[in-house]
Each structure stands twice: as structure tokens, then as C-alpha cells.
Image (cartoon, rainbow, N blue to C red; front, side, top):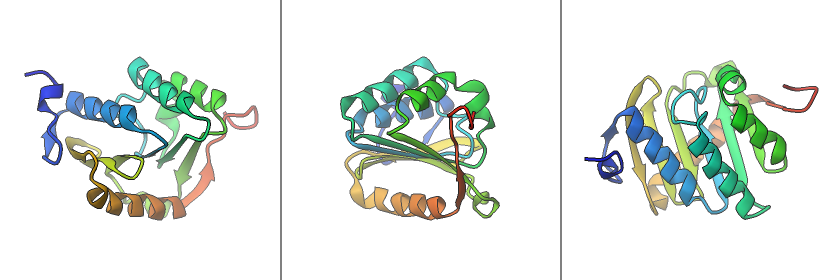
Length: 165
């Protein structure tokens, strides 16, 4: 069975490779908006070429497309994701990376939201156990609400200008 054969929506799925494949699937399906909450982006394949290509395709599709990322810690991003940093430079109008304050650090899951319909939810960052759904606004809604709550618990924006990174 291939990785993609194991990706059945609305079921609990295990494995890092499956998680990366599901992350790529959600990014590829996004039409207008991507929201990502992850403690540090160290899981999900964000540092890889394929994720970079998918994000670049998403951002290049339409000047109005937006990518919003919320992190607890940006060290993995700045040290291991040069392609994503380059995208942040090239698409500075479309990408915002927020850093949470300490009160939000209790959140130890991760999720990706594509538009208002698709979601991927990793239940705990230390375990490759997740669920995802396609065209399921009702199931995605609570994660959108959590994203907004986490956004309220941010205290800075990661800047890639010469004054930032």
C-alpha cells in the first residue's frame, strides 16, 4: 500500500510520511487561503522542495492568496527552511508568520486549514497521529475558531527584512 492509499479522509491516520502527504494534499487544494498552526514547523515536510513548490504555486495563482502561519518557536524555520524564508521574501505581501506568547504554549497540536473547507489536525506534535477532512466546513469550523484564538495570543510577527532575519 502506498502512502496516498493510506490517506482516507475523516479517519485517524498514523505515520510521519502520511502526515507529510496529507499536508501536501491540503496545500495543493487551497484556492485562496492557507492557515497553519504548528509549534515549530519541524514536522510536516515544510523544509522540503515539494512543499516549497506547492506553496509557491498557491501564492502565484492569485495575488490575493494568503498564507498565515502561527508558531510558538521560529528557530526551526529560520535554521532549516531556507525555501520558506525565500517565499516570505518574494511574497511578503501574502505571507504572515506570527509568534505566540507564552500563554498559548499549552497548545501542542498542529493543524492546516485550506480555505473554509479542508483541514488536517495532528492531535499532538510528538505523535504522528492525525485526521483530515476535505470539503467539510462543519469539521473545519472549530479549528478556524482555535486559529483565531491562537492569533489573539500572539505577541510578534516574524519579519524577514534586514531589520528582522
